[in-house]
Length: 366
Ligand SMILES: *Cc1c(COP(=O)(O)O)cnc(C)c1O
Image 1 (cartoon, rainbow, N blue to C red):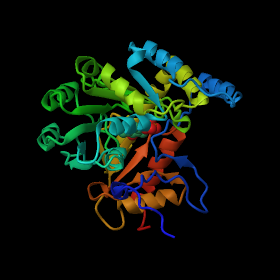
Image 2: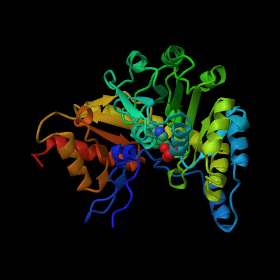
Image 3: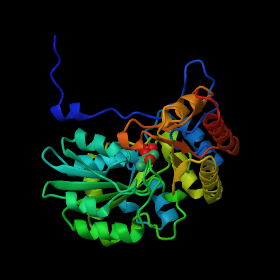
Image 4: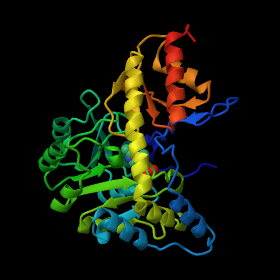
């Protein structure tokens, strides 16, 4: 028997490769490979999720209305223009499904979040990768890549895995250059980590333009990655379109309850943010002291460049760390093969990983 073939464009998808989380025979000491909050979630969010999990036979709100109201209050936004999803991945995917089809093109920057390419292929659109400039998205390059087929530009700001960002005036220039015919999706998954004064997650543009969307997540500083909650802020007509392709009941009840509590727990968020900024700078300073080059980061991770030698390479360091229970992220892409990405962890995890990196660089060939 042979099964009917899938849509041919589906076969273009290279499955998402998550960060390493275990090594057979090695006890895990620190998981610094997925940019989670290593400080955990708000206790109020955990309690709310537990209470909701005790009522599993009831469907959640089909349209996440209580969470949308809580997000709206916290950020000063119209809840009617907010859509919640199972992670911001779902919002990014729904936008692709609503606006791109076979024959269209979807643009994103090189060395960015892998989901944009997956989404483009999933809807049968052409995936157009625009080279970046020293690991920073290139607005002129993106604008030059636009053709009449272009429907969506996805831009992570700040970007993963580079940690770099574009200032508000560059994003405005991008939006102005795209005009009305192309949707600009600003993926602000790391907005809570930014301390650059010239950064803006995209709210003003979403209000000023009918084709600009901002997405956010509870997976990073809010510490709810396992529950899968994210949201988007969309122009009214776009929210209407995206809601048509959204499944009802898409966010589970424990996830909704936890996120609504988390968005109100400003003290917890402030504590995690202060920790993240402090240790991000510490990791970069330690790396420089070891002779490595950290890429300037506005996120909850740092990207470190290793020597391009056999014995002191990023790949060799990754193996050295994994053998000792420290999991970080390395990349197969040619541009990033000399780099490792290390998420901010607890104080012990941060000190532990940099001590091992130092040991690796000083020691004999592993
Ligand atoms: C982590 C991350 C997300 C968040 O994905 P969720 O589905 O909300 O967990 C989105 N975009 C980027 C660039 C990320 O790094």
